[in-house]
Length: 122
Image (cartoon, rainbow, N blue to C red; front, side, top):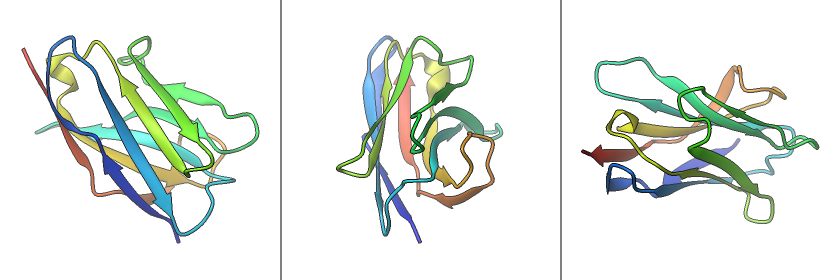
């Protein structure tokens, strides 16, 4: 079993930055791909970014965040980060961390965190 806990959400002005963290416990993330998702009010949950704990460490980004968000990992801490720069009001959502056993970001996702709120004011 893998338990995921997100942190780092908050209120930020448009153009500002936040860094989200997702700490995993229960087992190593080797063999998993970690994904960040978000869900805004009245909208479907969407994929934001992903990073593989496979050897290649491949990263994946939604078109809407390319060039603004960066996903990274810390193997020693079993933690994945999402650095969010140049934030826009449309980035406002609850952000979720999730884990899939697949080498890519398409899922299925086996584990989910509880989410952390990100609010971007204009």
